[in-house]
Length: 115
Length: 116
Image (cartoon, rainbow over all chains, first blue to last red):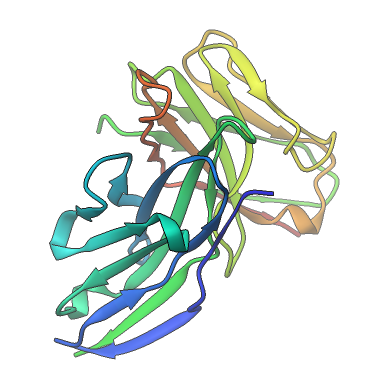
């Protein structure tokens, strides 16, 4: 079955540290990949997406992610985090050709940035 | 606000009661999704509509759960005979499907259900 895995449940960083959150998916067909962010008390917001083309995608607020097809991965990165990046981050995927038409989420990674 | 709107924001109910949630998608969006999110988990897909047609409902958690989108605009999610395990955040999302492999979902703020 198609699935999305996030390996880090809670990450704690100091401001200016670099961030990398892991995301892996299981599916060999066409996949669209997303990172969503949920700030405390707010709704899910799209951070960035990969549909096709350049595997390195840039999103809002200095985030980027790299799609590595051979590793079934779509890791999220930011070179220097800020306190305002404290939030929960969800990796998600649309799997085309399998279970049709739904976005499958990972369990999320909570990021806490210490000022 | 032209985003996805969900009502109510919070619902507290007693076990065994029926509850109904409403979702108003972004106006031109033809797809509407319902998800459930519990603490420490990512959103879990329940069902979705394309216009008024419910294209996938096998992921609804039990036959106590049902959803409608009668005119292809707003949608309702009903839970009958609620149980304490139904306590969760229920999220609605919408999208404009113009390319099969190029869909982007916009989420509402959710309805937090607490079953006592």
